[in-house]
Image 1 (tube, rainbow, N blue to C red):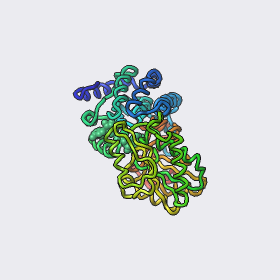
Image 2 (cartoon, rainbow, N blue to C red):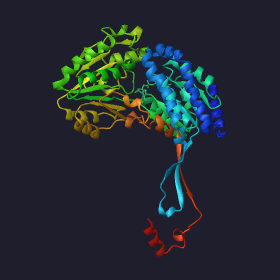
Image 3 (tube, helix red, strand yellow):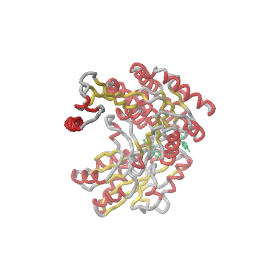
Image 4 (tube, rainbow, N blue to C red):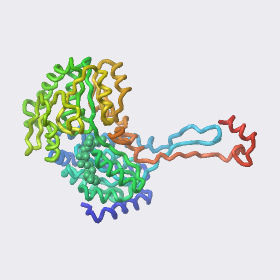
Length: 459
Ligand code: NAD
């Protein structure tokens, strides 16, 4: 484990490695990417154990959202690396002819990746894959709240990857504060808004660019003109996966009054189809990360109209899948991001009330709409803003590496995943290469009206 007093020297060591140029070749990048995959596959059972201990994560969810997510990112990056590293040609204007123009991605240097605890393997390593593909050195700072996964990453990364180029710093506020005092060439932070501001303030000291992957209250609008069976399947899947601790889980559902009862009956039934009458006994249902978060989520239920669930067992960090009908829109449940297994159902009179309701809150990380009516969907998307949107499903955009992932407004800035991740960790250098031929003197002094006329013609 890297001690507090060793952090500054560790970062300096990575910076020295970067300056040798070692990380720039495609060969080195591909080798390191392959080792990330190898590390993930060879240690699958250890990763599953750590995720089970941290979050009670079942094997299928852990494999799908953490292990195969990372191996998939590695494969995608290796497959497209040559194209992303190649010159990206653009047109050259008449005034600069003969000449060529292109964009060349170059690595930024030494970057910092601060991960969150809810998908602790995925959220630390997916940005790392992008940083490696882009040819950078990197410091990884996994979340201390998922302590088993953090420890495992600190053990495995130096075993598999180039220790001159990468290191893992474990720890909480003290260690992160020390890391943030170092100068990086980019910082990608995943977590809540409050720490996001701390990261951005620290980055400003060094004029370091940041990508902030934050959260927010992601709305889910359900039109009565929908396939209700499929709709409840998909909402329940992404709401109660990882016991609701997913940044892009639907935070609350919006339905019209005439449809609310039917929706509620189906959703209650769906919870029992998924997890049985007692979800605490289900091997598929996760646990809350720690007691502080258990208390925080439990407190949201005070003075609420709980129509399903609502019970918990603090010693087991268990909270039932819970439905709240018609919450007070000014209550903490509807002000804060829930980040837990409570689904409030907000009832509106008319679908046209959905957009103003969504717009009355900060821009969310994700938005969902279930409807057969394309006109309604287009109008809702046109009136609202969100980091990522899925129509007629929940969070499936995460499965498409050709889509950038990131927030907008208070839900974050910048993005990663696939090429957007490569570009985030690269400087896209603009290059123009001129020929010595045709050295028109229209732009050179002494100026004249004739030259001005000519310039205007050439524009
Ligand atoms: P967290 O408490 O795990 O903090 C994240 C990181 O910040 C950790 O590595 C931690 O060590 C560090 N940190 C904590 N306090 C600090 C301080 N005072 N100074 C410096 N560093 C500090 O994360 P969290 O805030 O509980 O995470 C939950 C939030 O993250 C939710 O809002 C969720 O929506 C969001 N999230 C977003 C994404 C995304 O991809 N956009 C993914 C997961 C979670």
